Image (cartoon, rainbow, N blue to C red):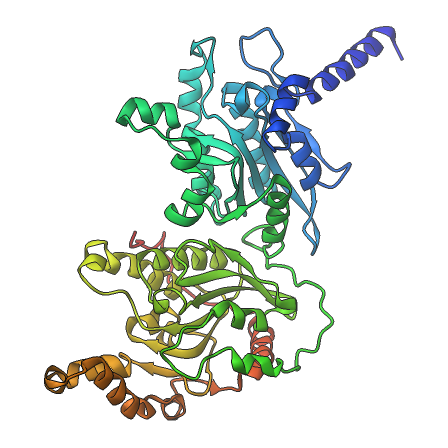
Length: 523
């Protein structure tokens, strides 16, 4: 080897070694003291050893002589083992030990490059968020801030255009303020680490300055705020390690891009096997008694494994992923444990977004209906229940993936349509014995048609329940089935067998839709 090139190679290796130290020993120590892994440690957990190809490792802040290792963001691609397959993914891991992982010109150029690679190769894009937002230097505005601000708009445009083409994951493992808050805002899946992750369009100092509100990061935009109140977060986890595991578990249900179908996980069970008798005790005898729909879901899915999305927000509806004979399936289920399973504005938004997500990536949908209808009343109307409910109805109508509907107990009013009733083209519409499909429930009918009697009754509520029980047999699903409204009434123990057959039968389903640019979504 010639001496000059040898010296240059040695310098290159020395530089790489310096860059791998990130912000230095002291910065890394402080990072660890907060209970956080470094960006490179997170990548070691996410990507299989020896497969990561780093892109832009030598990047550093423009116009600054001092080395800024990787300019605060590690970008590249590699292979991830999700438990089903070894898949290629593209990653941008913000490094908080270097300038707080802030966005500068070089930083954003690197992320733009990896987004380009992800879209060109049609592989999932993963952000590991830990960034303070736009870069500020030397106690004042960076000279690069204005051009960086102008250029970073490409991030939002490009991520919007990537949506529905490749899976987009934004894991929040630290702060994500200002521009970096819209990365999760535009992504498909946003897990957040409890106590260390935060999102907001402005941090506590900016909020205090603008609206004189004094808040901690956690109070302003922590995981509880976004996973329970705003709905911007999809899953609260306890640690960085648990967050990386959640990313892998989530992507295991997805194909690499919209032109593929999700892979079937190897499964050696009996597709004809009946569910254990315990499923019969899940649903209460009284139609007025609440029960946890999660229990029914766990009987239906393989190995009782259900990956729930937004489990603590809009809890009156459940959405998430499970498998049937290894096939990924998206579940939408009313949960009577919360508000009786009624669909309110948050539940409608949660369901609509999930349905659009599954439809974009060819994941079949299973609706478990136990719905009294949409929320009514002045508060609901002023909040826009018509507009929000229309989102869910629009999403169900538009979906072309295999759709299956199971009426568990009841399906009333427009809730029947939103939960994929007959007119929304379910490929299979089945019901359990005792289920009901109607414009409204017996109690509702009594309250309308027996108003005079109820006005004169000593105990109106008791009379409602008595009269409702008298007319309830008229709602029985076996009578409804005579009109061909359901395909079959089944024994709950047959649920898996019937659904697995339907999945096999519809796996090559194709639907024609009238050509158009896109629908006008009721948002």
